[in-house]
Length: 254
Ligand SMILES: Nc1nc2c(ncn2[C@@H]2O[C@H](COP(=O)(O)OP(=O)(O)OP(=O)(O)O)[C@@H](O)[C@H]2O)c(=O)[nH]1
Ligand SMILES: [Mg+2]
Image (tube, rainbow, N blue to C red):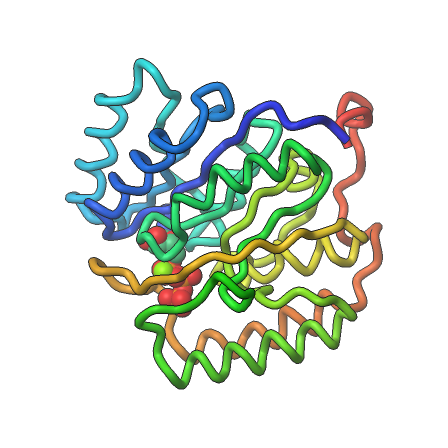
């Protein structure tokens, strides 16, 4: 497995404006420039004109010093956006996060520090670890989330506490080799389950979740029940069904 060289940040955007700016600027201000490969702002035709204008402003303001660009997705939904991001990523590592500030950008420097020490691991944020937490999370969703996390951890024989939180840093080569299936929010769960089936090691660090202060979630409460189907489907997948066939030139990358 390759050492850490730098990281690609994937930022899907629907209706965020100042949250997107704060996300990008916090990362720029708290991380070493040499560690940042690029920011890919992922958009679709439903992304608001205000968000697009803010993204364009960021490209103009920081484009000279940092590689920041907008990618218009062709696959649908947030999972589709992320999957295209994995393919595009030029960094040795890639971060899955949001631009609504529900994934604290101050955590990125810790992801990078740990990815340097463990380049072949997945470093993942947990809201359930001591030092992490939830602010403004719907009470019913919170109880459902806790039960779901425990059930899935048991089902997969792991001691992870927050498998559904879409806030992780991965080796890019791994993400490019996996045959992703989900297009909507269950992709976030799939990004933990398929690597677990492959025996990839995870390290959890605490993170604090605060509810977004602008825009709306694209995930309805009932959509969350589809996570059970994803968990069941992936549990018994064998390696050959998870990985793409290796091309000769990729062989030494993974
Ligand atoms: N490019 C793109 N971005 C999306 C799409 N759907 C959601 N996003 C963005 O992806 C991020 C996460 O989406 P949310 O809908 O907030 O999902 P979530 O916070 O994981 O889910 P909840 O906790 O259930 O609200 C946000 O920054 C959204 O703007 C999409 O179809 N395309
Ligand atoms: Mg969100």
